[in-house]
Length: 155
Ligand code: FES
Image: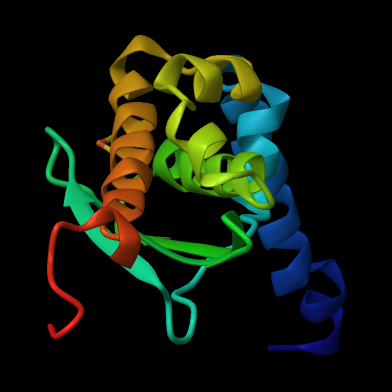
């Protein structure tokens, strides 16, 4: 390519920046600022080492979320999530882990999909099940905490 042509061409970064702007503009017509923020910069993403409990669950669409947590003094100390799901699922996992980190186990079990949807400023009706999946996965992980199981110490 000639130097003159190169001067007229957009850089790869410019093209990606423009695409990102267009996508964000479209997304903001459908999703709240809070959803976009948690999707673009997910918090607490990833499995954590030596969790006290974890679980994976799949939603009605087949997407899966995994939640891992550790507990200290009856409070959620560390928490992480992973998912193969859609953007709203990422936003739900991120927001939910932010909501419950540092909370007591009792308070964490009281969080509902409605609370999560309120925190996120709502989701389109076709994505409300993403919030259900995130909350159900959290409850599933909390249920697996050692002192919540009716199992002997030997297993
Ligand atoms: Fe199914 Fe998000 S969990 S679309």
